[in-house]
Amino acid sequence: MSIASRMFRPREMQSGRHHLLFPVLAAALAAAVFYVDTYTDLESAIAVIYVVTMLLAAQAVTRLGLLAIAATCAAMTLLSYAVTHGHDGDLQSTIRLIVALAALVVTTMLLLKTESARLTLLSINDALKESEARYRSIFDRTRVALWERDYSRLHAKLMNLKQQGVVNIKEYARENPGFTDNCIDLIKVVASNEAARELLGPQSSAIGELKPSIIAAKEKFLDVMQAIMNDERMFEDKVELRTDSNEDKLALLSISFPKEPAAFNRVIVSMVDVTQRELAAKALADAQAELTRASKAAAVGAMSASLAHELNQPLGAIIVNAQTLLRWLSREPPDLPAARRSAERMIRDSQRASDIIQNTRSLLAQSKGRVETIGLDDLVDETLILMEHELQRSGTTVRVEREDTPPLRAVKIELQQVLINLITNAIQAMDSAGIRERFITVRIAVQDREHIRVTVRDSGPGIAADAKDKLFAPFFTTKAAGMGMGLSICRTTLEARGGRLDGGNHPDGGAVFEMSLPIRPEMEYA
Ligand code: ADP
Image (cartoon, rainbow, N blue to C red; front, side, top):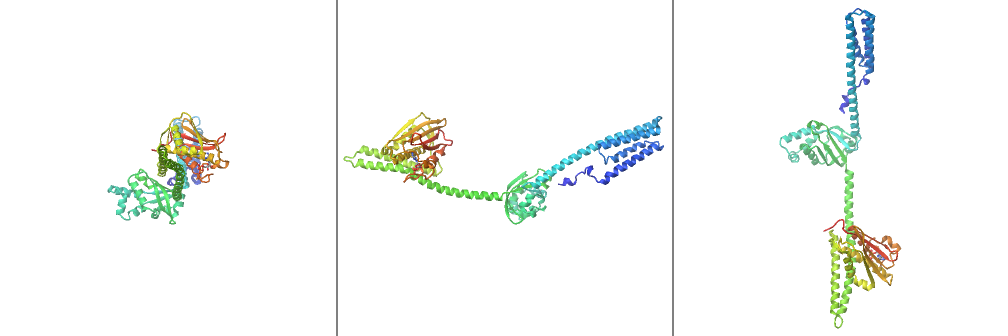
């Protein structure tokens, strides 16, 4: 920086010629003064000239040296006095001696003061030099592309326009073709660092006029001008640039404008190349869009599979009830009360099928089911009534063990479906294993202050060793007509509300599935 060229040169660095010249002159002068003072009859305060000796010597010696020379001069003055006047010194010559010594003392003190001021100046200068070097090295070595640019002429022009009443620079540029290019021509590059040269190439970062071609999109430059016009202190935005090799780049531009108009000759402009980052972000966005498309397709597939799976049970129940209804009707005479009961069951199962479709549809539409306050006792009872037929048909006895539990906030149809899945799985497992004594135990208990635990245990064969790890994986099934979606959907449904579902084998035999249900889900959806 320019300070370096104006720098004060410390005495140690001054040329060797001066180094020798001043002490030699000083010594010669001191010798001459001593001779005249001692061996001639000149009746004047010749010793005062020692002061000149000191002034000469001061150019080349340190503070200690100066003190030594002052002492030597004083000693020589006293020696001359002793040789010339001995013990009978008159008043005049004694006064001359005192004047000479006083001149030496005063000169020495002044020189010492000057010397200390000079040393302070040197140390300030050194500190300045060091901070300048530090700034330089930051400027040069940082990976951020930096320019020092002179915006003073542009600033003056814009302030002039402002005074003329121009407010919107974009409008003004539209009305005055060539205005933008003229403005770019007013900017000068004062300095640029290595990263700047790497970003744009050596020509575009060269000191001198700013190359207009580097500004690929002039619109942004108009924004910069508007910021100057509005007296803003900072401009930051993404800009498109064109390098020396005609390559388009995207950079994050940041310019801090000074407060004082005079300081616009040194404006720091910084840029960070974000071309790769932007490309990566675009690739990521594309990949995400692709993934969303794919997962939507998968979700639709899973949803259809889930619908087919969930509807199987109520539809099956409707068929059974319809057949029963026909049987009651074909009796002689028809058993109308029994037929009515079957019809009522059919209505109930149809309603449930309709609820399942409704819930699946609302899941697809991203709106979750209605959260309500549910008593688990009632929910279990209701579910068992719904499953009455299957339970009867398979000869399964259900035992419900209840602890006093608080009501919880949940979506009823979701919990019901999970329970139905677990009970159906239990019935099927016991059925296929040909178990004679078929029991299912549903237990409702407090797990902790925030959760209720519901377990469904059966007296079936338990979960096969090779199925344990894959139990909750979608499409995992060991059944000939199974779909392998039930447990996977159940777990996802509960987890979406902050709950859990785990399964394994009971130490006393049979499979046991455990639901952990939050009393208040973290998020409630209206
Ligand atoms: P699917 O109903 O098609 O079989 P699920 O996800 O409901 O699908 O269950 C996956 C597998 O988990 C079943 O095929 C079965 O092997 C096993 N399973 C589930 N529940 C039980 C149970 N109570 N006892 C033994 N095995 C079970």
